[in-house]
Amino acid sequence: MCVTYVQPFGQKKWIEFHRTETVKNNQNPNFVSKVLISYIFEEKQPLLFEIYDTDSKEKDLSSHDFLGTFTTNLGQLVANKRNKLQLMDRDGNLKSSYLVITAEELGTDRDEIILELSGFKLDKKDFFGKPDPFLEIYKLTDTGNYTLVYKTDVIKDTLNPRWKKFNVSVRTFCNGDYDRDIKIICYDWNSSGDHSLIGEFHTTLKGLADTNAIFKCINGKKKEKKKDYIDSGEIRVEYIKIQSTYTFLDYVQGGTEIFCTVAIDFTASNGNPSNPSSLHFINNNSMNSYEQAIWAVVSIIEDYDFDKQFPVLGFGAKIPPSGQVSHEFFVNMNPQNPHCFGVRGVLDAYRCCINQVQLYGPTNFAPVINHVASIAKNRRDGSGYFILLILTDGVITDMPETIQAIINASTLPVSIIIVGIGNAEFDAMEELDADKGGLKMNGVRASRDIVQFVAFNNYHDLDPSVANLQLAKDVLAEVPKQFMDYMKVNGIVPKKRASQTSSPEIENLKIQ
Image (cartoon, rainbow, N blue to C red; front, side):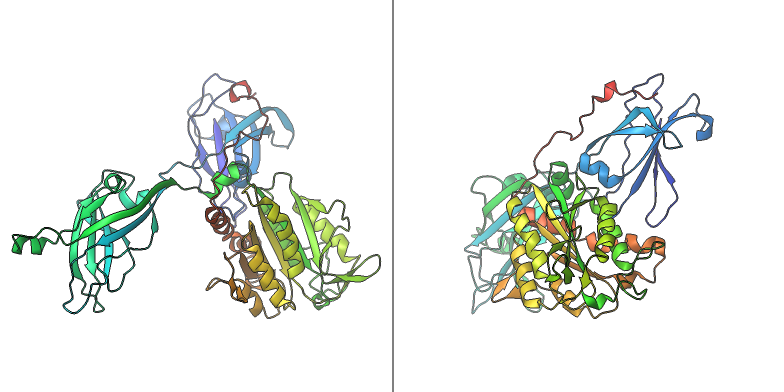
């Protein structure tokens, strides 16, 4: 029997979540019972697995023989899809037995409809002018009622409207039932809200998908009053496509690699690193704010980075050997091998760098953004996605160049996370995090919103055990959407791939 434990967000204790069935007298059990867990990219989601040899129906686990355990994170399991985990005893010693876990996204009907409709010779509803037609689309529910699925835009003053193409999931449109009754009503829009009925008709998704589908729009009241009534115009299908939609996990499990670059602000406004009031002060007993932010974000991203090698850039410092000011240097001072292994390697490089550079200025973002963009432009095919984590304490001094760099990068597989450290005013960062409207410069607008900003001080009042987790959750929450926006805009579909592990078939694995 395999027992699964989880750690609820912000807690350190393990909570039993699931037990499989007992497979009797078998050293190579293949468990039928599945563990269903909600996947959240921006959370660590630790998991603990324990294997027991059960000889009775006793629910108390201490009554059974413990065979081995393994601790991991859900992110690691979904990134690798098929995982061969070597079990350990309670003292952390490796055993000769393994647990194989296959992570799959729960299958749902994810097909999507792209539909464009037009009207032809619709009835006039106004004596002095033409109608302002729009459509409402309803589906029949299991209770026998109709519920609104979609409302088109209003086309002004025309008998022959062509409404904008729209997307809606098959699940939303007809509950996945291609023969479910669909009612489409055409109205003449009125500013009072009392819209005039032009006509309606019934069909199905299968009917809409017929070649050259045309439907007569019928006004019931007119049909009753006029013996020679034929119809109130036609609704035509100009375009329809039913296509598969994909999720973030489809791409990750299809082989898209997630790369993370860390960029650290080494400007003098951070304060002298030897002074305890400095934002860069190194204390062997606790992490400063830069270190906490690095730990919170990189420790989650490293689950999706297969080699866990992270380039770390610095900017705004005088660097050895000549003491020139640089806005784009490798923190480990090794241009031939600028990568750091794992989050601990990033932290070690940062701590070492503090003693080698002189904090200076100004605060320029554009060089590090352009650095990542120059690499990302070679991976436009969906094989890689790049996250740039910028940690800074101050006001940007190259704002026009930074905006231009972000606009250029918005066409590339890039997301930018900015964490503000310290008590400075970060109004400019809010401008870059263009949630209310895309960045624009010289008449050119960013093709996607790729920037997410948070101020680290917003988390100081939280419980320390929760603060870093909440920071990571907030800064990473938009990455899957930004990732999917890039793939969708560029028409990139996920690849199918074999398991990355070279583990033998599950039947050959022994649990001893």
